[in-house]
Amino acid sequence: MLIGEYSHSLDAKGRLIMPAKLRDDMGEKFIVTTGLDGCLFGFSMSEWEKFEDKLKTLPITNKNARNFVRFFLSGATECELDKQGRFLIIAKLREVASLDKDVTIIGAGTRIEIWDKAKWEEHNSEENLSIEEIEQNMEELGI
Image (cartoon, rainbow, N blue to C red; front, side, top):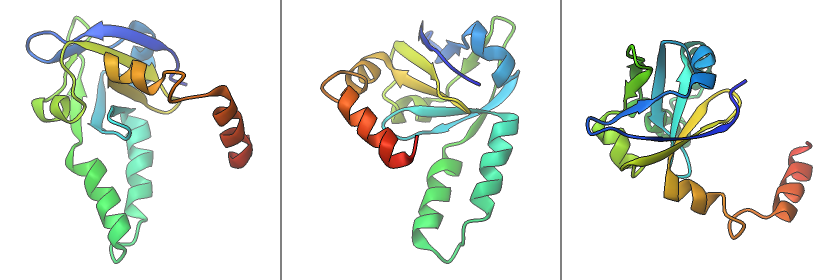
């Protein structure tokens, strides 16, 4: 399971270090795509295959399903770690997530999320997330 929060910086070429604690689960090759809430999602190849399988079951006759598939697949790119444990985030994805220099990578169970550090701090602030809301949402989700 992918867990934790890690701070790193993009280099001038748009490369980012994969945190050592996430490398085994993510593998040498993985998929990075447009995520939700202003971040990028990263999936190991095995998790990406599971996600793709779910996407394949969506009816092409449903407009929302088509848009969902387009959203995730059009931005997807295969990434590979170099010898220093870095991977390139293509310019389009860096732009989508407003990644500039300081980046936060979080483990989110079956995927990683790649955030602009300031965006993550804002998203994760007490103003946006309250313990009471989380408790209520957990109850609504049956957790």
